[in-house]
Length: 354
Image 1: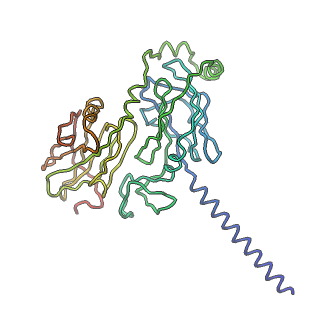
Image 2: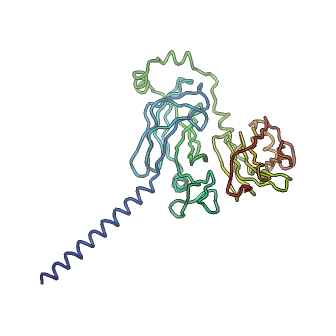
């Protein structure tokens, strides 16, 4: 009888241990699936400085967090600063901020597009080669696929504040940056509460800020226009028989960034993209013949050409057979560019000439 009791006690204890371990594993798995990222607040230029007064990043998990301390910085889509990491799938934001150059308080209270944000936080984008990786794809779903060091999960939630309450939100995965959406803040008409809050904490007065920073004709039009997209693809090619393209990195005027790697860089798919600001590309034509090229674009000139190009067109970067120059064509028409540069490169890739 005592033996039976001991056996039952042991079985019960073992069952509880297994249950505890399963619960722990489920808890750890759930914790690992919750995104962890930095938050940035950017602006188009230092003249367009804004300062949050009250702010909240609302998450689906309920562990709400806040924006970084201080004012906006950097350039459009990149504050140039990192702060303490936040945790939780971003559901939306509730922010009151002071636009110094407009002498206006704004209130942005909005939810992000739920299906899109939940889909994006599951992704990891390839932004470099990795010798331990097999065939790369543009991105993988981290909860369904095994992935290697070539892929980067969500690392930054970036907010950009433009004039008249225009706010753009991006998600950054290593180098890759994707726009989540454009949102509109409302003017706070009775702003005494927020003004008292803000000006009790800083040394400047509202009057001195207005005198030094006010921009009477501030408009979001330019940054709204940057968001215009066209159906196109960048293609780099050469008549040199040894030509291999390895990497195309594109920085767009709308704040997005894209990386193309082998194999899909050899035949990039046409899809909706904004106007490129700068394209960097890496290629080889033989052993000891590795190069890096850069092309710089003017938004207005290129946008005018893109408008007339229709759909599914190619921005062709044609490298000379001797690797000393390149020309850029929109299908077969010359593109008006700011400049191009070509350098000898020290980069090596998995398929480099040995």
